[in-house]
Image (cartoon, rainbow, N blue to C red; front, side, top):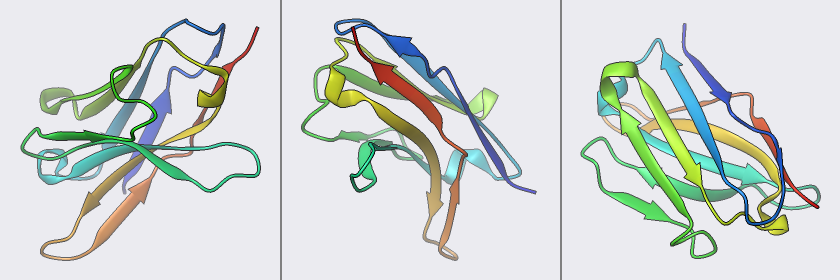
Length: 118
């Protein structure tokens, strides 16, 4: 049984910070690429940040310099530190776990709401 459970979403003012967590179970966590995606009302789901099994990271241009993705393999957990939040960061944030070898596998969490508003 595979589960990805996000936490940490909240209502925050512009310029504020949040840290999201995603706890994984039922997978060999250390071989998965982990990612954070978000979806705002009326918009497509978009990639926010990725961290590979080996550690390299990638970010959407809109969040570079403000967000940091990290992972703790001992805890099977991936984090997203979000600083200098803007109203356009508002949306449901989803955790994703992905491998392509030996098989293609994708798993998703249920999402956590982030609202940036005055």
